[in-house]
Length: 171
Image: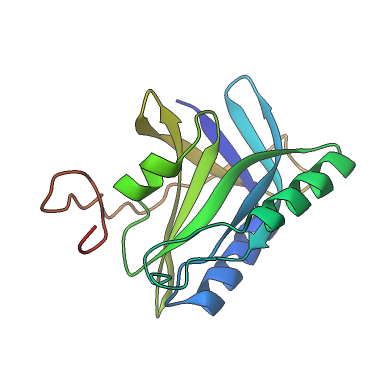
């Protein structure tokens, strides 16, 4: 199974951002390195969600924010290794829209958030047109030799009435 390491500081930042953005979807980029099927995230960056019509259940990452993040990553000797976004009031499972817009070889961290806070953080990777879950571990920045593996409380991935795995109403 592929894996993703997320520093505690990045997890705290992500939770703060998605709680502040609730009930709208928030999004951003993951900066880090990948080696032998393992992604080590070093930083997370917030991007603007350009989708104004359906911001409660869709995101469109601002391309200018992507360019800026790519420049910052390169300057720091890092790569863009994935995207993160929130699923307000829904499980941290990719939707059909998420799948249709995803790129292979990137990690897609999804945070399930409610008015009470973040319920789950999961990561996915597109492989042959299907999402495969990655294990997620946390670590203290600078102490990558002893990561603390976390097990998310998975509440299942809801399958919509259309059978396409889309969590969103009317999609």
